[in-house]
Amino acid sequence: MRTLLRLASALVLAAPALAQAPHHTPPAAPAPTADPVLDSLLAEALGKHPDIRKADAAVRMDQERIPQAGVLPDPSLSLGIQNDGFKELMIGKMETSYYSVAFTQPFPWPGKRGLRKEVAAAGVGVSEASLSRVKMSLEADVRRGYAALLLVRGQKELLAQQSVFLEQTERLARTRYEVGQGSQGDLLRAQLELTRLKQAAWSLDAEERSALAGLNRLRQHDPADPIPTTAALADLPEPASLTPEQVEARSPELAGARASVRQTEKLLDLAKLDRRPDFAVTAGIMPRGSLDPMWQVGVSISLPIYGRHKQQRAIAEHEHHKLGQGAEVDSVRTLLRQRTEERAIQIDTLRRTRDLYREGLLVQSEANFKAALAQYEAGRAPFLGALEALNGWVGDQGAYLQTLAQLQAQHIALDEAALGPTAPINGGSLASASLAAGAAAPSASKSTAKTPGPAQDSGPAAMKM
Image 1 (cartoon, one colour):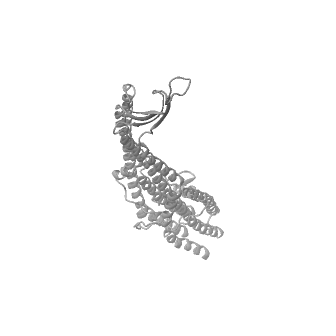
Image 2 (image 1 turned 90 degrees about the vertical axis):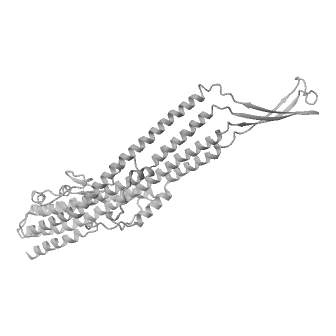
Image 3 (image 1 turned 180 degrees about the vertical axis):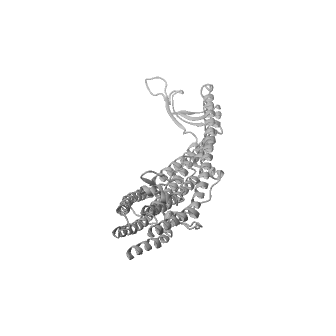
């Protein structure tokens, strides 16, 4: 009997220690601090990833087109000979027989070369927007991967803590069974929960290795390279929410669409100027042997006589293109505002859910757990009630971790100015049917106040984090 009391007392006294675990955030959230591990991962990814090198090369390639567009067309050299008759070479004997050397330099209508340079410069704006998108998406992927790694490691810590308590509970159930105060079913249920924890531990190990492989790919390391972390998920900084105007200013898609509009406007101006003729100046000399040489200078002018079917059609083409590009700008802006509003709503909801966990649910769940243990110790409650109270508390802790992860996901997507749906940050599976539900036995559920996190997935076999 003394052994029974000692085990029960140890279980009750250890409950506050579990509540003080690193992921049990105090009521007042600590001020966000810089994470040197995350900074190092970002620096490596942005400095080594081949997609950035590829996008940067595209920008440099387009920059090289600007000086090319402003250069005059290449001149042409013409060599010839003119001879009187076919019997012999008459150069120097006949005045109309000579060699000819001529240079021709085309000159576009004034203003065309400048417009071509402006078209090329606008193309650089499009490629620079693509480079910005690659950088922002890569940074967001690193932040999501790091948050997922912290989530899985937080879940592993939670699982280890639950394992300690279940082992103590199993010893308590065994002792009570041996002295005739408990049932064999209680002992078997405790052993079943310990077996389920082993399965969940293997699943979390696999999720951790997958998260490491993803982060190492982004920073161009071997997939199995370790990434030591000291921060918890709650330690990640939560930036201030951006306004729609700030998100628009950051959007590479919107910047690229506007650069495309500018490029199309310049192409339209160039098409209108193509209705003007181009020129070509030719200068040549004709040596005639012993006779005095001849020379010539001439100017040729292109005649845009097919303007109705060529130049006018080109103008109409670029006008339609301009309308389409303008519509794309409006479409991107509208979608971006929608995504920004959606994320602002989610951030507000997740913040309130996070605060509810900190200020109410975790405290209530812990109190319920300790009360159930005390009742079981005194013999006034069944074993299943104490077990489900423990699993309910762990379930609330897991849902709290998931809430923190999804709050990070919304901030990352907002900062990324992503047009698509917000990518979630997923962890592993804390297996156990009772853990998935947060409470199972009627006696436990009546005394447990539980509100699942907004991203929590409850199912009959597992709670996906």
